[in-house]
Amino acid sequence: MGSLRFRLFLSHLSVLGAATLIVGLSLLTLVQSYFVRAMEDSLLAQAKLIAESVFPGVTIPSSPSSQAPAYNAIQQQSTGNLSVQIRNLDPEATGLPAPTLAESNLAYLNQLTLDVSATLQSHIRVVDSQGVVLVDTNRVSLGRDLSGEEDLQTALSGKLFARQISVEGNAWYYVSVPLLLGSDVAGAISLGQPMRDVAQVLSDLRLRLLLSALLAVLISAPLALGLARNISLPVVQLTDAAYRLSLGDFEYPLRASGPAEVRELGRSFLAMRDRLASLERTRTQFVSDVSHELRTPMTAIKGLTETLRDGAVDDPSVRDHFLSSMEAETDRLIRLVNDLLELSRADSHALHLRAESFPIETVLKNAVERFRRHAGELGLELVLDPPGSPVGVKGDRDRIDQVVLILLDNAVKHTGRGGKIRVSWSTQPSAQGFYAPWAVVEVADSGEGISPEDLPHVFERFYRGDPSRSRDRGGGGLGLSIAKALVEAQGGHIWIASPALPGGPDVTPGTVASFCLPLAS
Image: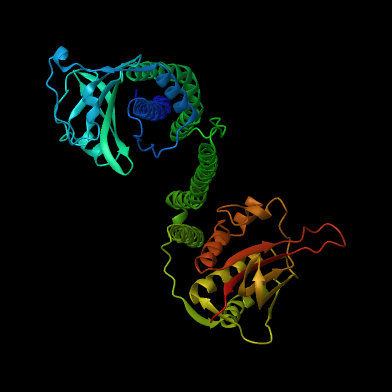
């Protein structure tokens, strides 16, 4: 019962029910107001007819409200069914005391009686200017002083009055209007009419609206269920995919569907899943590569140790050679562990950087001097190609020196005898699509180059285009990954371009490793 589909279904029906209820109540209120207004105008029309028939020369004020055609139709029906008869009144025959009306403008009514019959069962009372009842179609209030009643008091003040009251448990609507002789109020007429027919119409309309609302809800229920299903189904599928992802299933099919927001959520989930899958593959490959890199020197150390234990330790020359090899493998393990720690700090943004402004050429000159002898022993030409003016950068001097040494080490390893390595730097307004003033450092070699298949992966950890040759040269496959992490940690960028492998007279081999750093302000 608490599912998303059920809640959506219930919300659709609730909105529909609430809207139907509001419209129904508004319609009932409008219809009730319509009929009450029509009844009021009908009673006013009757009062005017009585005044014109019984009291010559007497006028009543007209209603200030505009009358709709429907009101006119009701009035015509009401007044058409109204008849007024006038005859002399015999007080002795009625047994009623004759009121004293000497001061009344309507004193002559004491000698008359009115027989008013109407199909609408109207109750009519006529009072003089003092509020004494002269005519009462119910014969109840004749001769009584009703000037204290609110409706007659208002009418005797020259104003119209209308209200709804309850008579013996039934609703009646009364209108009281003044009778004017010139500018003087000669009396008032009060007319009442039962609201039984209006109540029956409203009750019937209320029942019909209720049935219509129930029918609308029943008809709309399948539509609401379909809409709820269309909205909830993609969410359910997304939930299933998330559960399968938690189990390590990165191939569970999921199609982004449903409303725009749900589709966007599905696309975001798919992007996240692809990213997690890539990270999982990287993690698996990383663990495999680390295990392999650690196993190789540890296996070598174990083999050398066993050989020494088997008697080689007694031969001084063999023992020294084995100990030297064990030391080299241990150094290799230490370098690998240090590189892994460096990458771990970079991944967790825990690198300790000391930003300062300094000329980049000092770092490059020191690095070239440190490699010059080694390059000469390998038959390589190492050239420093400075610009015309010094270039200041902002960053950690030691970390930038580490990046340059990594790039020089790679260039030396992959450039054959007789090759050339050139180190240069310059300032550029933009680099690799990044628009800012940069100091750009390039380490170019005339070596074997990098194949187009391997070029996109050179910064991946433990990646080797030629694993066996790289390992023989002492590479652990982490140098460029560390260089990339160090450069980006200082707000710079690094990239490698390699034209092609040697293969024709028009093909220029070699690799250019470049990185840029912000200029010192």
